[in-house]
Image (cartoon, rainbow, N blue to C red; front, side, top):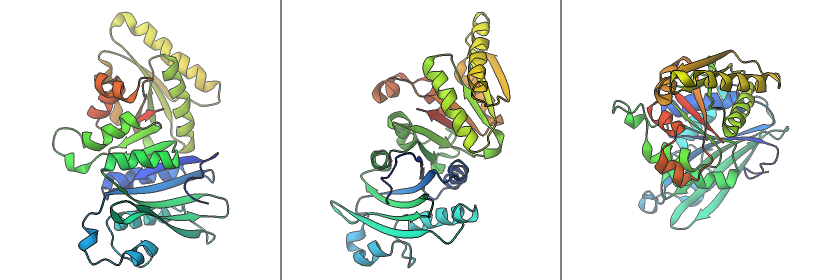
Length: 315
């Protein structure tokens, strides 16, 4: 079994970069992926070569013993810490885990791609993946093609802290959010105990998102709240109808809605202001192509840029 076996599995890819945000998001992934039907892949992406040709590193030993012998290749210490986090959370309890080391050659890089698969008797898999790519964003997107994930989680880059953009790193997070075919969670100070704020505009795409995220929230026993924003007072009744429709949809599936919120004003401002009371803000990605989403700038992506807390874009 390897990390390309995706049929009937809930697949989470957690991007690891050593930041506090990435390990907070890993804890959230552990709650989502705690069941036997879920796999968690920890992914570290490094630029090709990275000076390894002249570093005197025994490449064959490195490939075979990426973590076992404590060789500090780029990214391995971050992956090891992530594995320890999962063990501390009880995700890898039991002694029936089988370990498998896999190497894939990559042109122009002596180390190539390396991973360790941990699989238990129930078929649950934890994967540590050290991936080579021209840049971080393309590496993550290429990994989706391999793993066909349901959710990609990445902590917003800490290097932007204090620069007025709430940890927002447009070079990575925005590109992943725009182009990934699956749901994307950008984590900022992610505290799992405060529920999901699901924002709906009444469209078919939005209602599908409401249903998808409610199922996701149920995996981690997170409360669900619904929100709609009217541009003006005249549209307030329509916004109320949107949240009522979404509430009925969820209640028909046995999912309890904690609260319904209707605001009047600029949707971006209202959603961003309400967001910190919840673990994360949830919005739908548009049906437009990635290129159109990038240039047109939907509400979802503007909220992601300006929010003070975590944002999940559902596809």
